[in-house]
Length: 455
Ligand SMILES: Cc1ncc(COP(=O)(O)O)c(C=O)c1O
Image (cartoon, rainbow, N blue to C red):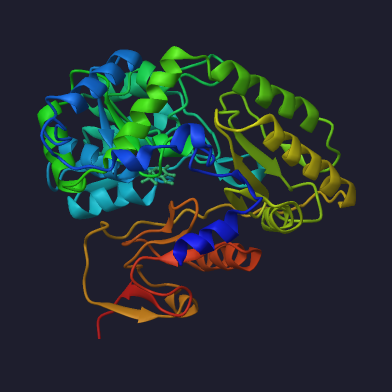
């Protein structure tokens, strides 16, 4: 039943979204046949000494890391494991406020005291920009934290200066964990920014399924320096990864890395991208966002100077052109690309954008909304008695849950933060625009969890 529905949903539709294999048989064919378990000779991901160890050693050599570990539970398993391995229970940690919810969940379960750094809002797109080394320095000194977690590149392709941040973190005696869930394709061509692996980060987590042609769930945890204990990471992975890691996922990582080593996948990919950017520069109203340190594998199509919003653009592409994008926000829609994309796919997208562009009017939107800064009143895990009320009534109260737009899955408000009128306004704006607003325990906007006020 489900299979038939998926067949129907995807029939004739071009995928500018993850997973990065883009449903191309070259990357997926035969993987079902590898669905075995820890039988004789098949090794065990949790204590690899045989064929899985061989595959991981191959990856470690390819990346030039201290150790590269395969994961099947996505970047989420890697983030939870890295933070749990590096931070002792109840310790301080510096995290960038635009981190994915997995970072917050790691803080929650380890009762970490989170000191936030707030990247500035970038451009008129309303997206978070890069994390500044000086802000990391201040936050480490203020909190005494010995671990720092940041996201680079972000969902929208914004890259931070990892080299300088790593220097700051190490000078303060800390460990730098970089969530590069969106950066698994970096480091193989100069066309993209360098990977955090090459720039001094201690641990780098990559969701291989997002930007490499791997099966969903495929991810890599790179230990890049000797500041990190392999044993602690393995112990934590034993907690957060399934005890039955799917072999098809492991094989899809291995197949991809072998192909990267043996064939030049990136030159044709870069040519396709360059061709696309060059054609897109002729658009009249829509435009492609770019900045200095930016991952051009993300096509961030701005609607900011048009009379439609990002959600409307995504819907038109889906309904009229059978092109599915990854996500939309008020001022942009985002297409994800990979080495598995075809010339035909790029041609379809640029053709559709030109047709749509002609129907649009120029509108220089005078306002743009960006995530408001929420004041932190309590730690993430510091509970209390909670109650469920509507978002409108929550204004002025302390949130007891995460509320986020999905994608991208970075909390707009986190537990322990003050639910302000600006937060409500921003969430209402996103929701009216078409974003899917989710919350952990409740049902946005009718029932969200806040801390009960004293009677
Ligand atoms: C920045 C970031 N980190 C981590 C994750 C989690 O990765 P995964 O979906 O592979 O578990 C995501 C997922 O979207 C993400 O965007």
